[in-house]
Image 1: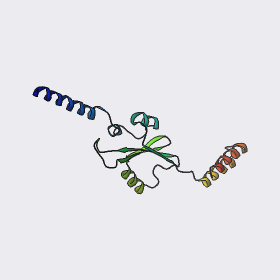
Image 2 (image 1 turned 90 degrees about the vertical axis):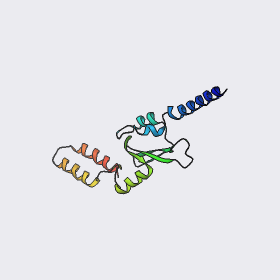
Image 3 (image 1 turned 60 degrees about the vertical axis):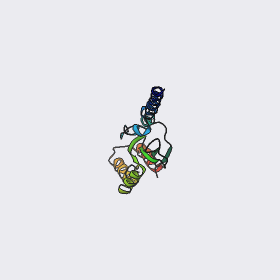
Image 4 (image 1 turned 120 degrees about the vertical axis):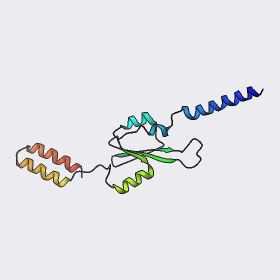
Length: 146
């Protein structure tokens, strides 16, 4: 009876450990994220985020990570920042906030300087590098960006 109980306890311990170790967690998959990956690559690797936010042509995929399966405290948000559909940077929410404070324009899509674009366009027309039709087409396009 003693050996049967011992064997049963060992089997249960093996099953529990196998369950904890055998499954790839979001936490373990995060280490495979690289800048330049597409959103589709991230989603196929890690899965759907817990939250997502979009603003000004960029997107944040937010995954809530816990220290362990037994962690009862609030999970730590892990952010994957995408610009134009590709990973620009990633890290814990705290790291991302620190980065943005140090680099306020990082990862933001910059609008072109419309005035300098008009000046270049007018110069191209004066030098006969573009015809009037092309000039007005490009001018309309620039005005639409305002």
